[in-house]
Each structure stands twice: as structure tokens, then as C-alpha cells.
Amino acid sequence: MLIGLGSLAAFVLVVGIVVSQLPGWHVVQDTFFNIDEFVSSFPQLISAFWLNIRIFIVAEVFILIVGIVVALARTLQAPIWLPIRVVATIYTDVFRGVPTILVILLLGFGIPALDLQGVPNSEVLWGTVALVLSYGAYVAEVFRAGLASVHPSQRMASRSLGLSSWQTNRHILLPQAVRNVVPPLLNDFISLQKDTALVSILGPIEILRRAQIDTSMSFNYTPYVAAAVIFIALTIPMTRFADWLQARTQKQRRAAATV
Amino acid sequence: METRLRVDDVWKSWDGVPVLRGIDLSVASHQVVALIGASGSGKSTLLRCVNGLVSVDAGSIWLDESLDVTHERTNLDDVRRRVGIVFQSFNLFPHMSVLDNVTLGPRKVLHRSRDLAREAALTLLDRFGLADKANGYPDQLSGGQQQRVAIVRALAMEPELMLFDEITSALDPMLVGEVLDSVAELKATGMTIVMATHEMSFAREVADRVCFLSAGQILEQGTAEQVLTDPQERLTRDFLARFLR
Image 1 (cartoon, each protein chain N blue to C red):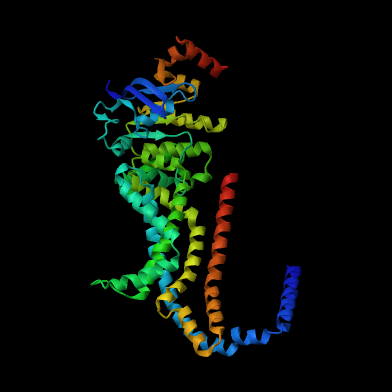
Image 2: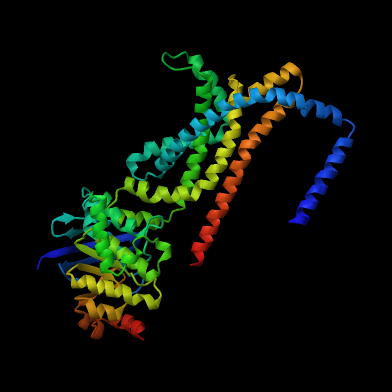
């Protein structure tokens, strides 16, 4: 432990000295790591970040719903469900294949341009819908893998008790599938948290747009760095939590396997 | 005696390979029928046809002479709530407690209240010596205990017919006895049972009738005494000789 810390401290010191001796360092420092700029832009960035968080939370709820519904739709076997299965498959294929930013542009500028009566044209709304569609396709695949990881004998046992296909999904397969996919799901949500910044391309003043405005006024890039720090402050705890959860799941599996 | 189960000229192939080739079988209520035969002779497939887990290619299967399992308009959930099945590999639901495993069917399929289902489950668990395991989880139980929970789970649906698919084959030899005792106890209550088994001495003890399956056909059947001690067919003799050696 002590050796590790000592070695880490020495490493940081050496890197710090080397970087600060570089000829262009003071220009870099002034442009990217300007304390005054950092402090002055920070409060506005934080309040703009609140929009990112709202987009994230709302999108996350709908992504989970879309993911589960599409994953279940793709497991339907009976011939009568073929249309639903085809639609679900096309959905995942298309939205996993198209870059998220493209979906945001298409929906965010495209739908308001239709000028449909009764259809809202809020950029935040359509940006969020685009995120839901894009991430829903990924999360559907995660759930599908989770459902496939539950042994078929579980379905057989459940149906043998007289439970319907739907009851079997609801009480037997999904609970076990969800347990298996929590770590990869958290990964997708960490990624979603960052991608809320993509909505900035439509114009709403979320954290990235705010930082952009600040930098364009002062010609100083410190607000970008400040925005990055704010994102990291949120993603790192989530990443550590995901790691911890994954380690715990693995430990439980190992324990169960040795019994 | 009324006929609980009648299997009438049932045929089944998997990918062109015949597994059942014209099975006829009739089981009266309160009767215990043992299916014996080598692995792959069709015992498991036959049991799974009876509760509709496997669809037949031809033939029909009647419950109580009134419900045709193989008819395409038959609701298989109706069949399955009347026919209990226990598998070789237990297949308990690992994310549920023992009590939840047992009460799930009565609550969701028979629409019993939670309290009523719980009370009935505890009585059954107690009868099979599992009262202290009600709040445990499947991975905390021994194989024998898990299999007894699986039997209780099926019984909680109050089936009129029980199917046992080699329920002791995955068990440590030490644990086979407790599971077989449960089956014997079930016979004593008058349950109608069809069981695929490799436990010949147990079959002789509890079965009213033994059927020897070979290559998808019932080659020989009769009382346990007849089939197991005085088999008429050469294949039956060969099979038993390999088993009893």
C-alpha cells in the first residue's frame, strides 16, 4: 500500500515537472486551465447541467421500457406474431446502425419541419426521443441476451405449472434476466449520460452548449474543461458502482458454483 | 375403475428421427405405472407429450376420457394445471424462496389468495419434511431436498395425475432414498402416477404396472413381478440383465 502510494506520488511529480517545463505550457495553462475562467463559468455550467440530468433520467426510464418490450417482442415464437417480430428486428437493426447524432438531427430538425398540428416542436423533447430510440435498440439487445442466458428448463418448469407465456416472462424469465444484465445496463447508462450532450446540436442550452457560448465570448477553452470535470464527477461514481456490482455478481456466481 | 389417462397410438419424430412409434397406454386412477427402458427409448418424450410440452405427430392423449391433450383447440394451460410433472434436474426457480416456488402456481394459475396458498404450501412442505426450509432458497438445499420441493411445487396445484421423469437420476446415491420415500408416500394417498425410472427395485416395490419401452414402442408390459422377474421379450431380458448386474 505504502509502496504503491509512494510510487504514484513520484510518478505524478515527474509528469508535473516535465509538463510544466514544456515551452508552450503557460499558453496551454492559460487557455485550458484558467482558474478565473473556471470559477466564473462553473455556476452557469452546473445550472445548464440540470437539463442534461433531466434528459438523462427521463430517457433512462423510457429506454428501459422500450428495451424490455422490444426484447420480449423478439422472443415471440408463434407464427401469428411474425409481424411484431419483424418490426422489432428492423427497429434494433436500424437504430443500432445509425449514429446517435444522426437520429437526433433527423428527429430534432425533421419533425418540427413537418409542421404537424398538435405535434410539439421542442428540441429537448425530440432530442430525448432520439436518445430513447437509439439507446432502446442497444438495451433491447442487452435484455435479449439476458433472457437467452436463462436456461430453457426454467420456461419448461413454469409452463408445466400452468403459467401462461406472459406469466412465465413476468415471474420467471425477466427477473432472472434482469439480474444477469444489470452490469452491462449500467455501462449503457454511463454512456447515455455523456451522450445527453449530443442534444446540444439542436440548440437547447445544456452544459455543452453553455460551455460553447462561454468559450466563444472569452476565447478561452477552460469552460470545456470545466464541463468535462462535471461529467466525470457524475460518471466516475457510476462506473465504480457498476464495477462493484459486477464483482459482487461474479463472487455470488462463484460461490453458487462451488456448492 | 375409471381411466385417468389414455394414450392412443401416439407417434413423434424429432427431425425425421422417430422417437415414439405407436404408443398405447392406459392408466386407471390411483394406479402407479413405471416406464423403464434405455436412455433414448422415448420415456421422457412420452411424459412430455402427456402434459403438452411436446406436441405429437399423430395419435391422441386423453385425460379422464374427456380432454384431448393433442387437439389443437385444447388450451394446454388447462391440461398442465391438472397434470403435475417433476424433472430430473429439479428446475426450481432460483430467484424465489422455497415458499414462493410452491405458491406461485396456486396464486397465479388457480388465483388463490396469498394467505390460502401459503397455508396449503406449509402443510405440504411439512408433510414432506421440508417445513424448516420454507424461507430458504434453492441453492441452499441439497439435491434431495430440492427434488422434494419440486414434488411439493407440483402437488400444490392439486393435480389429478403426476408425471415423474427420472427424478432420482441426477441425485447423489445417498439422497435417492428420501425422494423415493416421497413418491411412496404419494402413492399411499391414492395419487395416479406415471414415472420414468431406472430404479428397478423401487419400481417393483410401488408400481402396479411396468412398461418396457424400446425404440419408441412399448415392447412389454405387465405387473412389476411379471416384467421384472419373468420378462418374455429378449430385449427386456437384455436390458434388465445390464441393469441388475
